Image 1 (cartoon, rainbow, N blue to C red):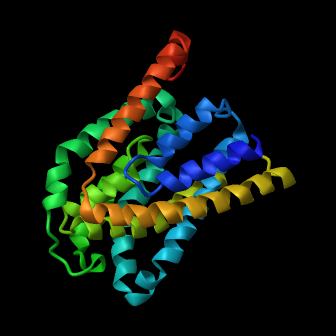
Image 2 (cartoon, rainbow, N blue to C red; image 1 turned 45 degrees about the horizontal axis):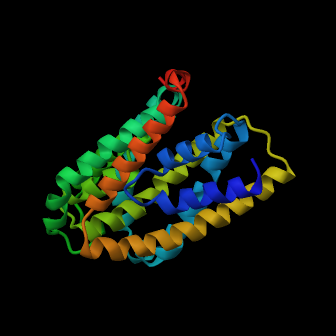
Length: 266
């Protein structure tokens, strides 16, 4: 992987991490199209630069973390199901689901779901004054729904935002709760993945990681600011259409690459 590819992947990561479009899916597809998906360091890189995106959320929402201890309790409860399922299913998910074909199908399916429930999501009113006021039970159920995002192509942001809306939050509060829940979830997932990696990291790789961290941080910052403004006045239907288009385009790409390409990803 060279510096240009590192920058491209970091922008893809930051721009998609907190949108309901699946950052993991986009990273898999991007690395596949650049023909670097089989490199051991690329897998480590795509995991490590998530820390840049996490840092952007911490910087943007640091006041929320300082306001009340309740937010830590609610996030902790929501994180429990993901931690348990992730630990138990880690090997199976990495072995069988991290492939372009599965991602493409998941993108299309997720897009259909977003379009189908768009009106319900937009119309929902909150039962709570702030995200941290959510009940323990509702926080736990959001965490359960987040477990679906372990399937590459099923967006963590989409799962938690939908889960939040159907558990008492309005779309803006659900979006904020999704951002905040990303911090413990992504820290744990990134840390566990890095412990499992066997890639060798030298001075050249450290430079690429530094560029990736900065790129993911900056692109995530911009994406989150724009996304929050967008959801205040719109629903999520546009992201549903986007997912379907991207999924279909890549399915066509795999088909045009030949039967061997499709069979390799089954």
